[in-house]
Image (cartoon, rainbow, N blue to C red; front, top):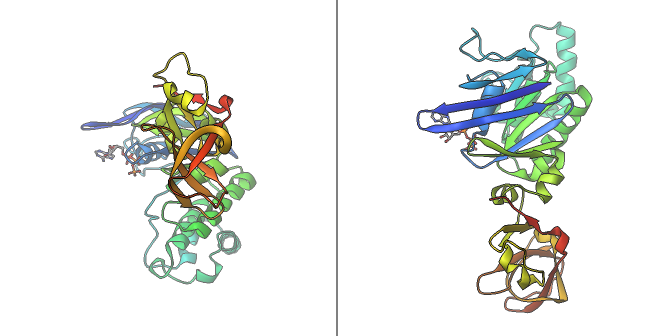
Amino acid sequence: MLTAHKLTKSFTDVSAVRSVSLTLEPGKLLALVGASGSGKSTLLNILAGLMDADTGEVRLNDERVLGPSEVLVPGHKDIRLVHQEYQLMPNVSVRENIGYALRFYEKSYQNFRIDELLRLCRLTDVQDRVPRQISGGEKQRTAIARAIADKPAVLLLDEPFSHLDLPNRLIVRNLLFDMVRQDSTSCLFVTHDATDALSIANTLGILRDGRLIQLGPPEEVYHRPATAYAARMTGQANILKAKYLPLLGLPEASNSEALTSFRPEQLRLDDTGAPGIVRAVYFKGSHYEVDVELSRYVCVHLLSTRNDLTLGQSVGVSLVSSTVWTLQR
Ligand SMILES: Nc1ncnc2c1ncn2[C@@H]1O[C@H](COP(=O)(O)OP(=O)(O)OP(=O)(O)O)[C@@H](O)[C@H]1O
């Protein structure tokens, strides 16, 4: 089990990581979601033993993970970090890149394991090419294959989905999901886009300005985000002051200035609902995203499968009151 206790890291004029504590269990996937500059990469480097924290400590199964100032070769033998830039060896093949991680094993096991990883990561057909001859998705999968080759206890990934198209995202997502279950790997990845995190993570954390502001099961963070930032980082959200709830036919809350949040899918087009005017319609394939203006100051975003909506059309909107969530400031 990997644990971080009150990690803090500052650079000259910025606090990149502020008192972050977390636990990562074997066979579990933890995703940290945060905007650019929220401290994701800094935190990963500290967890991997590649950067010294100013205060706090990282432990792997009760043994302290030492920072670069305390060891000759930075990094921990049971923890792998897959960087955003993949860091593959440019002049050797995909097969050799993966094999490098297995160089201390017997040749027959090396070959068996490389073949297995090539299959698992769908790289068999490009195994003899060098990195500049393969796609971004293949590079990403090669970096992951190399990182998991000798079955590390902990796999850390920096934005594993950011440069990938949809088919590649699904391949990498399934790969991580299967690997974590089969090998009981502890896996932590950071991302600025929660889409994949919501579907595979056991636990989701929200990082803001170096602080872990929320940590919990994805459903809980999605439906009960701590703040407006947590709501927006985990998907589309309607954020409304409580005083505007009557526009949706709901009773006004006691604190009219409190911020409330609800998801687009929690709103329904309903002829008997609160009146509004369609201001935008976006085709999304399986459904439409629709902006409905409820007043001069309030516009809500909802999902609909109706294909007859036109700009300026009058519609009714309803929301189940129990789904309105009050945010912390
Ligand atoms: N070596 C450094 N020297 C000075 N400041 C740094 C250094 N590394 C990071 N920072 C600052 O620390 C903060 C956190 O940076 P970090 O790279 O960890 O964020 P991030 O969430 O990974 O961002 P991104 O998603 O854009 O990669 C930022 O304000 C960044 O400018």
